[in-house]
Image (cartoon, rainbow over all chains, first blue to last red; front, side, top):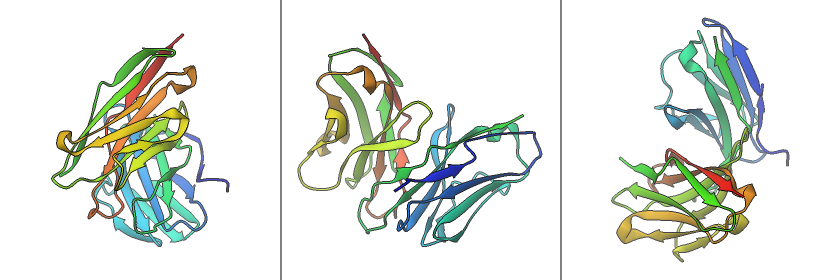
Length: 115
Length: 114
């Protein structure tokens, strides 16, 4: 399996622009997670989906952030408008969903820089 | 609310020396416990996890961790550090009744000196 795939790997944009991050989970996994990693705040869970349905979005910082999962093989995290404080590495992860303490498999991340 | 504390944001060890990374959690109910490793410019990778049963858990790359309920700890060890162990290590917990959410500690960056 190719693992979790994220694109782009790097994104540089200007403040106010819309940014869309993409994720393809491991085939057959029922859960998908979006995390943000910064030096100041560490690794934070933003939102997670089960069978394409958002289960917990309490970590989404504000209305500028939105996430969708239109099908089992694709998810997007959108920031509109972007701000410099959104600069971070964004990780997508997926897990099988066996009902137990599943391992989460992480993608390589997207490094976002907002100027 | 559950939280995870990793003591020491940076640890420096000599090659061949013991690696000890500390993790304590706060939860009234023993959670599931995980250690992940992050190599530079990569995503996180599972090292090991504790669910139930034997409290000493062995993982990949020679790492192991022991769950101590009385101390609410899940410290990670490796008897002999290798240069390739230089990375950042994250402890994480998941409450059994909290869905599939993981809460991560702040991470400990390990530097291995030759």
